[in-house]
View 1 (cartoon, rainbow, N blue to C red):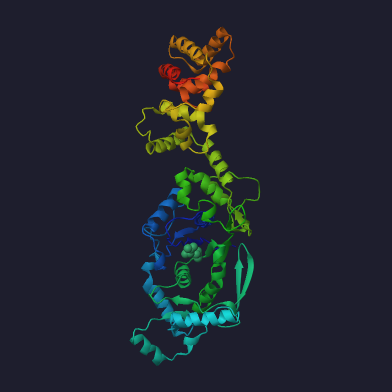
View 2 (cartoon, rainbow, N blue to C red; view 1 turned 60 degrees about the horizontal axis):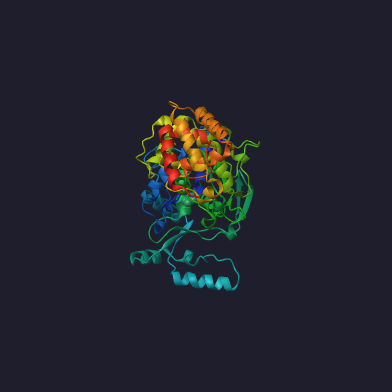
Length: 485
Ligand code: GLU
């Protein structure tokens, strides 16, 4: 049973960009919240001061927003549980560690890094699991006060009790059992006064009344520590759901080396947010049928944690591409036009003079041939400017000694038609071919080359109609002079 109005959170560390795995975690949390009338919370876990990157939080928020994953509570949106940035909650963590120390469930540790290294080295030699040996647990109160007075650097460690069974009833993975003997006396408060991830995470999940912790599988090994913390604090333990790893096609862990991992990179490449969200949703989840095409609101309807797989999910870029194609084809004229205009604005054709009607004709002619909106500009640049060059291969293949003359005839005949339509270009071409006793192809190929500079693309008569009569004739005249066999 899912508690009424569950509260879930996405708790990224701001390391500079949003990883696609992070997007999936955020998405599953979001979907779970929406499906179950819950709250989706964004919490920034920035307690590792050595990894701070400027602008990372803003970037994260912008990227989540772009993807359509608006949070109900988080930075700038207080729902009564803030602040939602951990570095603004230091006094809270201090208070709770003090409480644990008082109850002897945590203790001061003054060990130097040299001692810790020596301990690790010795344990390694004897193949014992590397663990802190509770050396400082036995320092008495007076000694502690003395050391604190002398400003000796210290950390606070969790006093893990031996032989405790730690049971995780994971919604995705089922029951996972750990023995507390394998859990180290985890540092809770670091010598810089900042909490570690473990402490801050548990304290905040408790105080923010998080009911379900939905996060990547890489955090499963930290969960025993968290459960002990809940127990030692005497707090209710939330439900856990650890999401399967994301894998490269060779089944290794998804890494930068084999492709992009930042959501921003996919965005910059021109992937639609709808496609990326749809694709990421299927990395580990399916509704149990063959359906693959979803919009975000449909995902909200269909999603359930019970249908998330345990097995790692392969990140298949071809699938993402085909998803982008599928979503692109479903775009309305209005949406498509908006996207094309955005791309044009940041292209070298930003001062083009084509009106919406023309742009829509271009879109219709090219839509089914592209995976990305920007390909309209890349592959169809001839709609925006005269050919700057002519494809050599195509010249060799299609331009003959009679091409110039045939094109001249075509230009002349079309010139006499007022406002020719697509069919008029086609009829004229057939007529000129027939009169000259050549196949249509003898005109089609050179004509395409003359007006576009390349050999492929949308239907020739679409191109001619979009360019218009004057421009078509001008381009034929220019090509006649420039293209030589
Ligand atoms: N700050 C952790 C991260 O960067 C959060 C893990 C969790 O959700 O508990 O992913």
